Amino acid sequence: MHYDALETLGRERLSRHFYMREFLYSEIANWHQLRNVPDHPEAAIRVGRALCTELLEPLQLRFGRIHVRSGYRSPEVNAFGNRHNLNCGSNENNYAGHIWDYPDAQGHGAMACIVVPALADYIALGGSWTAMAWWIHDHLPYSSLCFFAKLGAFNIGWHELPQRRIDSFVAPRGCLTKPQMANHAGDHAQAYQDLLTFVDTGVFHAPAPDSPALAQVPNATRASRVAPPLLVPTSPATERATKGGIRYRAVHTKTSWRRVNNHESLDNAIHGKTGAAGLFAGSLRKQREAHGDPLFVVVWRDGDHGGKVVRPHPRQVGQVQLADIPIHDIELMEAQGGTTTLALTRYFD
Image 1: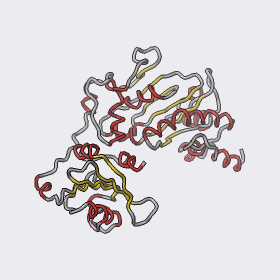
Image 2: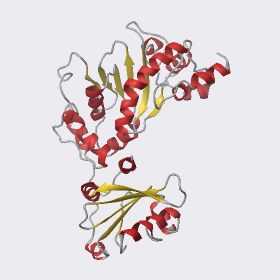
Image 3: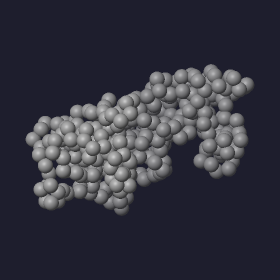
Image 4: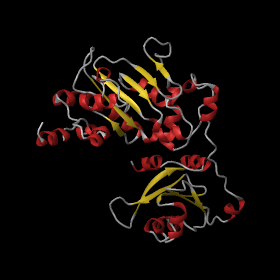
């Protein structure tokens, strides 16, 4: 394949948000100077479109931005990775998997290893990867899933004849489900409801000990998954410092929920020099040094039914952008002592 043809291949749009180029990147190929290009580009494009359209797009729509760790592998790259123990299976086991342009005995397919940042955050707080596995099982026409330890990464595969099998190298290790198992059929919503709540609100609830998501996890492993309490109670002194019932919470890169209650009005808390506008403009240098770069501010007034989420305007330098937030959501974040940037971004969508 000539360079111009490779450039054209990279520009092939596989779905609304995904192009072929991001699936051709390979650390193995880059480091060892190997060629990671399909022998049969049309076949790779066809199955790649199915993978992206039927699996990756619905995942990204529900859980936010997807990061592709490993997509297409040429037979040369995959065989090299297998010979040198670089986390690649044999070529035979990767046909219709990471090797998109060659079928296996059952037909054609494609696979990608992805990281969903929202899932990585959920697992870091004590959630289980099984929540994502059961959501995909109930909602998407996947063929195979296999979960790994780092960042909650997992292989997700599409195939003309789907296996509908889920495996994992992290506890609970082994096969979570396959068509012959009793847990394969039915609704598994209880296993992933806490994950959906976390993605939508930023509030984490550790799964109950008897949750189906933990049904196969040994007791010692369950105990290690219980998240530490995130509640940071407001002290009486802080409460007395509140002026005009105005509440101000800043979300920084280091501090996820910085409490300030010294603003006299909502306008001052949003547009004042000591409010959100001043914080984003850099006038409050000590706050940046102590807490990191500011990302969002949440402000509200006691007794109101809602408040505002504030962030730097994405197009107008020096301006802020506002979004409405219900008081119920604020109360959940306040009780949890923080939230995620993904949860706050959704109010602007």
